[in-house]
Length: 173
Image (tube, rainbow, N blue to C red; front, side):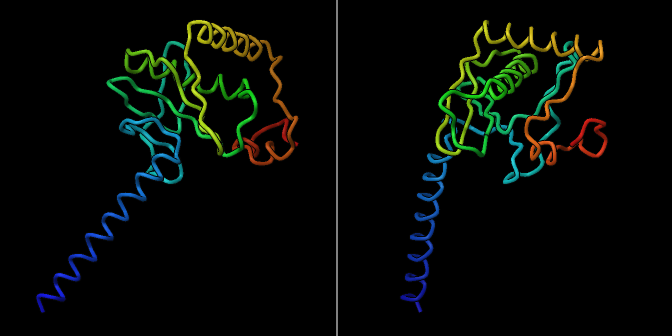
């Protein structure tokens, strides 16, 4: 009987080592930085907390991940597509919004955010220049929205068909 318990215990230890190694491999392959994941809004995780919100700008957003590194929160945005040669400006501005919201929510400015594509992770520095470009873009969008000049982009029919606002959009395809 004791031989059976010894064999069973050994089997459990081997299985635990396998699971630890597999977990470490998946962490490396995820492209996430080292640190503790403090927030997640992906299908593979439980429902995320409320979105980040800045009342001054009336801006809200939900990054895929927030990772804490040495007391600083780093936003991570995950894209399922392969990485383009240069990141799409819309992806960069989306990440910049998350950096801004993290700074406004925590009082600490993230030095960068991460764009995780299917095949690589890009570090996007959150510079004063990027922040100013973002604020200018937000002001332009709001100005066009108030004047009624803002039209939705319909360059991609498939994207329009997947849109969450399709049922109420007067400009849907």
